[in-house]
Amino acid sequence: MGTHLLQRKSRGEIVAQLGILAAAVSLMGHAGLAQQTPVTSILQTIETASTAAQPVTVYQADAYFEAPNWTRDGGSLLFDQGGKIMRVPAGDGQPEALNIGAATRCNGSHGISPDGKLLAISCSTPEMRGSHVFLVPAEGGEPKLVTHTDGAYFHSWAPDSKSLLFVHPDGASLNFWSVGIDGTGEHAVTTGTGVSDDPDYAPDGKWIYFCSDRSGTVQIWRIKPDGSSPEQITSDERVNWTPHPSPDGKQIVYISYEKGTAGHPSNRSVILRVMNLQDRKIRDIVSLTGGSGTMNVNSWSPDSRHFAFVGYQLRAPAPAATPPAH
Image (cartoon, rainbow, N blue to C red; front, side):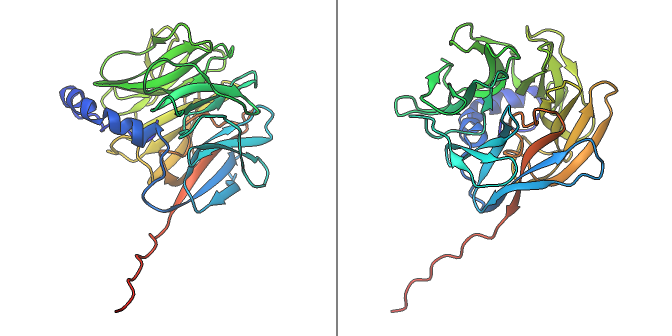
């Protein structure tokens, strides 16, 4: 999810504030609306095995775009820009808009199914305002509605490609839900007040990684798909969001904000960190200006050797037009 709720202060304050901010979360968070601050967006990839690896730029533009996904064949990257889903070669090239039929105002919550056949998108249509999860063929096509909850944002596919996870802001809570790709079996995985966000399945399906403020600040957690056995994964002084397991299940990448950061804002100084899930050792991979939009959804390459991300360079606003002299 993008720009979020307030950093946890007290449980009572969150309950009161979440109700007021739920609409703002939908618009400013997952909605993928263009920022008011002019930026240059830079889509990059980086290798994780080498400590000397440097980011490789795939595409950049003086416009806001966000949330890369790597295609299952490794040949392309998807991202959203201006309410559209764009596709660009992973090596070098210019992006093209994917055919998503009547879907509009698509945001940074999208992803390709493990079997490579379907693309989940979070968008509106002329008949349905607000964000809903739709499925289209991976190569593009007409959208098919999946979620029946108003205000739904895709986050992860189940490993068998038969169900998916989505986030739903609802009054005094932010939780994630599961639903079958045929729209049946919709149910909450997490419940209660506070933040449980950015869920992403482990490739073996045994755990769902997510971020939550249930320990006092937002940290990385994991939970069983039935909602049992929550386990805290990070516990440092920084504020940690958007965990994404690698396809081989050996590591997770996540965004780490400075101590005291409220919510999941954009255009902040952040570190992209990788944790080895066997020994829980953490490495800093790259520092950048980013946050919301950088890595909203899983962006690992199919071989687990690289991940993609978007960084931002702030640009000065265009000067106001000077009225003609009289």
